[in-house]
Amino acid sequence: MDGQTLTESLSDQELAERVLKAEERLSCLETTLAAVADEIDGLSMSSRCSKCEESLLLIKDGTLYCPYCGDGHSL
Ligand SMILES: [Zn+2]
Image (tube, protein in one colour):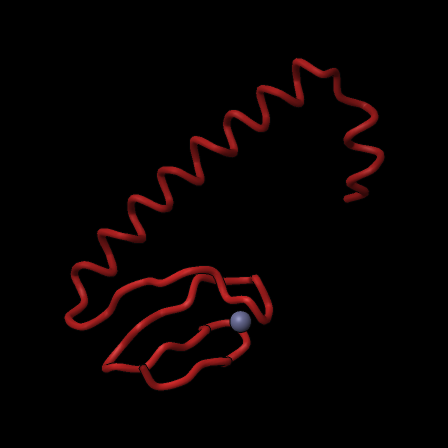
């Protein structure tokens, strides 16, 4: 889908509602993801990967790594 065309065809109010819904979903996903990480022994989440910015960095067994680009190092 062409993002530019989509943006132009929506009113400001429709866009605002979409952003609000997206933020609600994101918040819901973050809560779920944190709970899932808590369920796994020794796994925790760190900041966003500075190399690819496609994922949060994961910390497992003393190693920091990015599940998307594989960047990482031992702590
Ligand atoms: Zn990465």
